[in-house]
Length: 544
Ligand code: FAD
Image 1: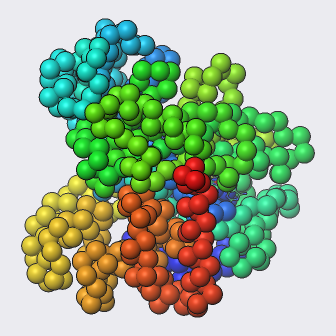
Image 2: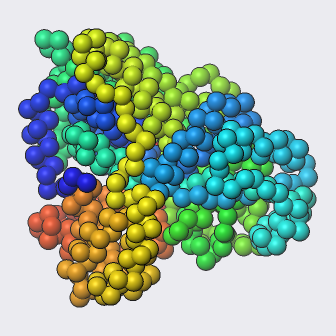
Image 3: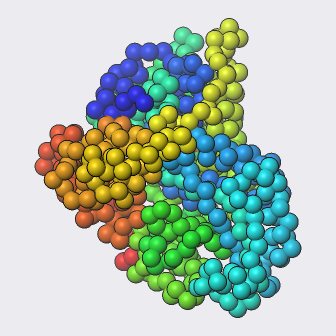
């Protein structure tokens, strides 16, 4: 793939001022990333600006599931489930390094909110809507089997359980890989650039932008603007238009993370006794449990978990897994995000539809909001199709149909994993690394891991895990426009979420890599460390 280095960021910003683009996209979450990739794959000239780091909004704060949404069956949103399940299938082949099959177990209890027979129908429907192409078909446990598999499950009233297939992902990396792929197709994407307003000039739009790293202002000239700012939609709309009418009903969700030793799950468990569903999701490096769903009125930039949120999730965990006696001290991290839901007048947050909406406040601007991760490709296509309606017929005819079902990263395909497995022993000998570390690199990067292994040669003086994170850091700077320490800890790696000490044991090693590659002086090193601590204090202030 083309280099997407932090060191080239300034060049990209210069280029944004020199070209007249077909589309300029505001927002570098999964929606904006998807739109950039879709439009660039059609041969359009595309620029994208993200006010923070890529995926720093909701797109790094989800339940990290690629799923049909079993819950939506209850609201009879069958088309939404069908669409999401077919996208799930595509993503297995498009991003096998980021989207992994996972079995989910729903325990059923006497007197539960959803009766056993309804679950049985739901399971069949879920397989049917996946056109029977799920990694595994649904299955059923009786009480004894459920307790054999999940020894710590609440026994009282347990009837049994249902097993079905879905998938988990690295949401942040999926966004960043989508941006890298868009960049590969010619899109010009930069982070830490805020869109502040626009003007119409000679048949074009000029978007006023602020480079937040240098505090400088510049303009991007384009035919059309796309707003993909998720939960910021009303804030952006209100700042761009005098007569903006609010459209959103944002809702907050939080998650807690734990070690896999403390919550030893092989399959995910769906805890759905109340209106809300809470998932316990085992992943390679941790167990994630959440989420909540509460109306949220403040700026999405300020969202954080509260003690009330944390107590709610802990209450559900202890209700379902009483034997584990999980307490505050077991929590590794928390994270919170804001769902960009469209206000559809529903009676509660949970009932508000997850469907996306595309609208045009003026002919030169297309806005998108709502939706979910899983269906981002579909949303992107709708947005670009709608935007194209504003282009002259002759211009539209110049563009190709979208090509977005090809692998996100040509080095990370299903075939490349086969090659990697053949190379594993050879690489272990060549790079003098234990096979378990080589496997970790392969799992995360498939064939691209060779680039990281080459980087790791520079860090041979470091012990295993330090060498691993040093190589990851240098790769992130060179290939993912990773600007800050916090970007690395929160959105390039699971360090913050999956380590009891949030990965601070590797801090000095990682800082050295940033210092060397980005020429940080002592003041910058201090500022970067402070920013990481500040984030932790903000998000985990409930601990006090
Ligand atoms: P965002 O990711 O928020 O991106 C918008 C971006 O716009 C932000 O990065 C922001 O910085 C930027 N921006 C704002 N203003 C400006 C400006 N003026 N200039 C430049 N940039 C700007 N979906 C699933 O499919 N599976 C799940 O398991 C799942 N779980 C979820 C759990 C929770 C708790 C939440 C909150 C959501 C979940 N979702 C899930 C939904 C999914 O995460 C979101 O639909 C998706 O991430 C929204 O992406 P987005 O790009 O629209 O918004």
